[in-house]
Length: 123
Image (cartoon, rainbow, N blue to C red; front, side):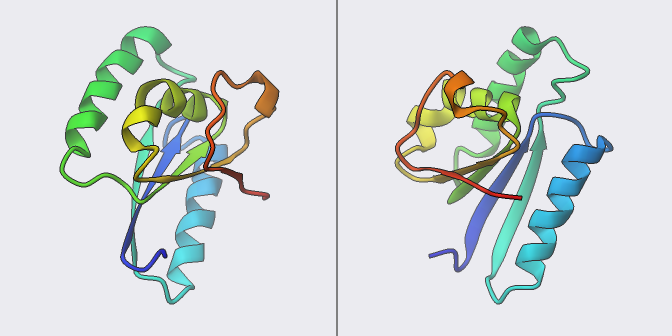
């Protein structure tokens, strides 16, 4: 299933933030140590340092253009802001084409949208 898969790792925070860097290392090391041929793309919402509503609008359009020709096979959302962004901006677009996983989400009950193909990653 994941052979030659494109994986999008969507972080709530920024590169250099210890949580984000640790998740990235774990995901990249897991695929490097496996026999699975994948391409991992990493995007950052920068939620700790940006104005969410204004920035999210621009980021949504940028990522939509960036991935319009090739949507990811798997999306991994790291933390609540990444999941909320995915659910509100991309769920309809990618849900039929992508498997969604998440990690670091505080509570499923606090999330705005429930997605059928949702799987939590236990760290």
